[in-house]
Amino acid sequence: MTEKELCRKAVDMLDMAYIPYSHFPVGAALECSDGTVYTGCNIENAAYGATMCAERTAIFKAVSEGHRDFVRIVIAGRSEDYCVPCGTCRQVMMEFAPELEVICLNRAGKAKKFTLRELLPYGFDQSWL
Ligand code: THU
Image 1 (cartoon, rainbow, N blue to C red):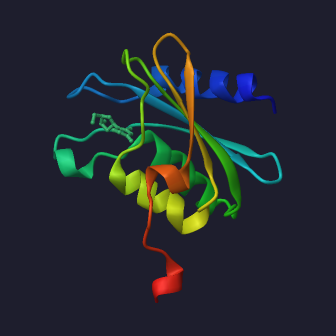
Image 2 (image 1 turned 45 degrees about the vertical axis):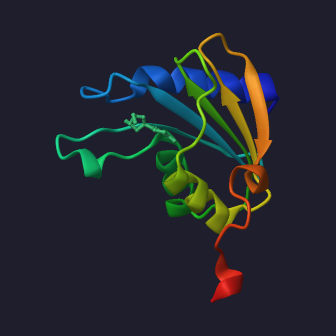
């Protein structure tokens, strides 16, 4: 899938976000090494701590379907600035894909690209255990 197509999938997920509390939609599209794509949106809860981010929705969908080898994730938001992943999502990405490419989109669809290593330097992983 081209980067443009993957970005489109992440943007499309903005409309699936369940966001009655923050009104802050996030969409994600995760590409596996075999080309399979899993999408996700944020899903909020009246007990705020039970909210799930878009990135982890996509990652957990993929892992639960037997995929653990990820190459890219696109994260889309409707904010003026690029929608970057929260710390918890960075840590979950680190578990499965320390070399992940992270593409963050703003509401204009402009992209800013990072490596997960840039976003989570000196991250904790299996090598410590
Ligand atoms: N959110 C995500 O979906 N991903 C992130 O990495 C940052 C935050 C969601 C959670 C919540 O529904 C809303 O954005 C505001 O925090």
